[in-house]
Image (tube, rainbow, N blue to C red; front, side, top):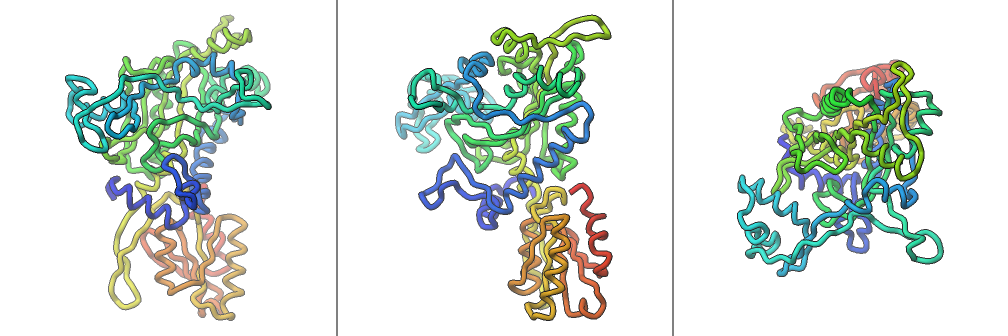
Length: 460
């Protein structure tokens, strides 16, 4: 389907246990979400595919898992304490707060030109009234916490806004212990926190989120070629996992809007068709030059340069950073996989079918075992089949409702294969295997079932 029906996908996520509002029994919140049983599996599968592609399948990338709470000097050195701020304005009508730059960008995207009179030309997003705004003031995106018994300046720490800095401060440790040398990369995944002014669009923009980042260290002068290599690689990763390339684009950041550390940044974006904005960033691929290693070397006094024995030169590596948001990737995979079609029913007609055509490697449940009847004659065999398959994959076991209805339940969560144990199974030791997308069915003997599925679920 076209990547437009966000609300339908959100409702499916809530109904089928992929994502719930955090603290829902207390009213919930727009800025935080809990991942349910199926959401956890999908999220972990995406992360697993990222790690496999970026780390374990490569000789030149290794992984770390760094602390969420780093010493405060880390964030002072990186520039986050000083420059990780946004201009904030408040509507005099609703007293809601917005990023001034976002309001201006949304106006320009809608009208094709910037507002002639700045914020005065921008209507209130809620009431539609002519804009009346406070003067912009800087708002810190860092979330603070305090360590120790007293909430004072000495105990002030920050929850990390990105996983990248944990990589940079461990550059020397990792390079020495893993015997790597440039060009090589260090990958890091985990939770990050940003005090977003206007979180929203479901799991797209939240204050607590999960990142998948890799810093690839290269020789100065080779950075531009490596940067383009990683831009192409990251775009193709989404396509390889099932995203329609027509729904993806590469967005080049204008020079005047680059982050303070960036020489060039290109985003991989997906056509979510949000209200007011068609495209949403999935990840950024930045050429951070030698900014991070140089600034940490200056502030810490530690030598973070590399001695190139081949050339006899010492230099500080440049860094290429592919930085992806796990929640955003999950949302894109869900929206792109959502389809509605028709399936035959037992009465000779057709029913509307909702199906998530997720890549098999991402599907939360790989196989569903469905005994045709709850009768005790089928139960032992069906349970045995399910138990054997669970040794390799996440398997669902469902006995509730007509077989067609059970197929539909599996289709809408993206289960690639349904295995039906019927009364013929007791005679021929075979089961019916149904494929999700084509709905084709094939009779497979029990002794060949695991191999049959393993061939089709390779890489899962």
